[in-house]
Length: 406
Length: 231
Ligand SMILES: Nc1ncnc2c1ncn2[C@@H]1O[C@H](COP(=O)(O)OP(=O)(O)OP(=O)(O)O)[C@@H](O)[C@H]1O
Ligand SMILES: [Mg+2]
Image 1 (tube, rainbow over the protein chains, first blue to last red):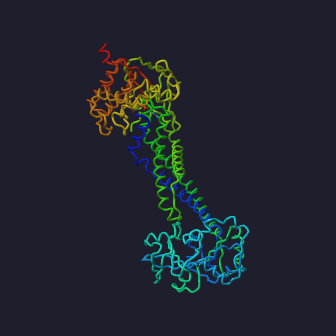
Image 2 (cartoon, rainbow over the protein chains, first blue to last red):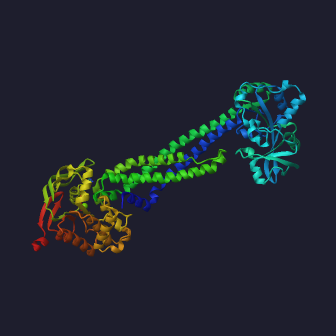
Image 3 (tube, each protein chain N blue to C red):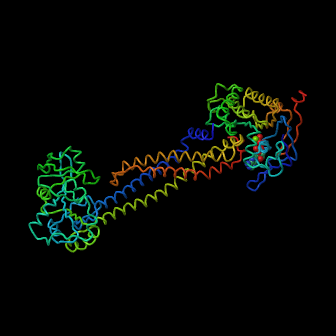
């Protein structure tokens, strides 16, 4: 028999005595690990979005509220479609692409989907050709060469995900999101019936983890006709050729379309970053509260344990236990409490983040082993620190308490 | 074995000072079997704690062999108890969550013995007390007499030269009492020094010398009739 088995046997005999403090550690660690997982991944997601979306600008109805960039066109408010041509023919510097969107609810094979009307870029080109005045075509911005990438040259329908626009789309064709393809089993070349009309599936988009996965994209004018909305759109997305261009464009667009709301992607992302910062700050606050409560309950539990085992401690001392042995008995117990409940809490926290991250924050979560191990180590360290004082009190007990009856 | 010099223990609580024990001189020879008698509250347990290195005297010195006990550090006194002293308690003081075997192993564990040695010595000692069938029982699964046997096995397993017993027969039926007293006598015959505190005149008769404690003061009661008849 060793010190460890002595501690283990006591712990096993009366686990309920340590239940509250163990539970506090477990829940505390679980909460922290879950929150940190979500914030870390949400931050990563925001910077990833910024990187892919680059210099985009949104033109929205003035009273539209905006939380999620990807769902900006789902507010139900509308703008006249002619804004699209106004923007395009204003010849603003740095405008790369203009893509209007109109979203209406629809059913596909009995499933609720968002039917989003878009204008293929080829139609702008024909418009430009028809006008045959290159004067109206957007001018190149000086800084634009820097950010041009291979993705921009990709003209396949799947590039819609990255480029926010599509080159070709016939009035009887649709492009479907990854989720919908999975749920309905539709493949490119298949037939889909939407709002009473048959479409052929041009392409299936790769999964993005955004609301785009649940959309069906069709030609804007087809959607307008089927939904009887008239010549309106919900949002116009402008792909600026670079960050600088986007910055310059906002005031110019504001002047051009005084009745609309114009926001840049970085503004949208800023609010999202703000939310993340808030979560970050809250999690530190939660951490402080949990650490305090955790330490207090551990200290309380160990102190109570010392109190009710006074005579036992005295007896062990009479049998030759040194004060150091006695204090180690309680510190070891606290260490195990921290390690055991911390590990369980960490695993639960990861599990929670994996389940709830996609639901709450819309981000896919990967377990972060470093963070999780750090949480366990911190929980163990804090448990020992909290047990230090009661353990010292135990070591200072007079061994003659062993003679006290009951 | 023990020598007390002008020892006094005073408890000061709530403004009143209680002299729990005082004596100008007392010696207990090596191999002696001394019974300490006295009414409740007369300072018997206090004396035993002082002898056991568990309670610093307010003044005076206590010698165990050549060593002044309270000149040692707390850790050193713990080691001293481990090597020299065995305690017998009125309420046995078994560790409730350990089995009989593990309880007997505790002193060996504290002395840093190997697990094998611990188990062998503890098993042998429990067998000596007829408890070989009950090695894996917890104290609450044992009768009062059986608990006292386990406690005795625990006291003797590390073979201490001195035994300090506080009311060892106080809670026992006549049969168990006999067993305890016989064990103590046996230890005495093996040459161990025994100091036993008791209310029980029958138990006191088994010692070779009695000391009366009255209101914290010692009065030598001389040799017991048992010893006189032996002598
Ligand atoms: N920790 C303490 N604080 C204050 N007074 C104490 C303390 N311990 C003992 N006393 C007092 O010292 C005196 C002697 O106590 P002690 O326990 O030695 O008596 P005892 O002879 O063992 O009694 P009993 O036969 O009832 O066990 C008593 O008056 C008691 O009240
Ligand atoms: Mg007493």
